[in-house]
Image (cartoon, rainbow, N blue to C red; front, side, top):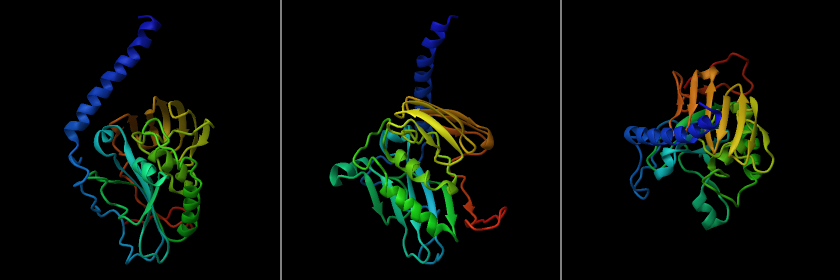
Length: 271
């Protein structure tokens, strides 16, 4: 078969994969809401009670997006609570808010582990204790410096995943490996080079449409038309669009409570 024939097979194969993956997700999704007005926003028990938790806490979540977008992508957010704080502050980006308020960045005190319109959130990172208040300072600084507050595009970005990737670059201690379904995480704007959100590597990307990323946490990723393909040797995972990570260690939802920032190396903390 000639090179031209192989090149013609690539888009056909991609279309077949997308159709098959969407059908698989439709058959296996059990928590998707049929009506956003009545969809559950209840917490699922992944966040500590701020009324009884004195220490500072940072958590990062992602859940399948609302309606048909949930077949392709997740919606992420970051929640912070300072030492002695009585409530979490949740930072996220919503396209509907842009039209109403003039800014896509949303700040609220909603439950950090609340369902996203019926979809159960997955915990991507959890950091608590000493040194976390200083980390929150940098997170809030990154929220304030987000350059696309007045712009939102579902594809290829900037969107909610672009926002969370921007914030995480200011908090490499969290070492968050955003899932392959975080469409928009690779949108970098005009400047095509940046460090990865986990802080363990770098990426080259053209407007969120095409690029490559290499990092200790992420492994090797190829971005094509906003879709992520890759391999993660560290977590023994294959990264594919729509379905996400495939392997013995699921990337999303596998976060553990991490030790305080000033803890001795090798310290382990469990929930």
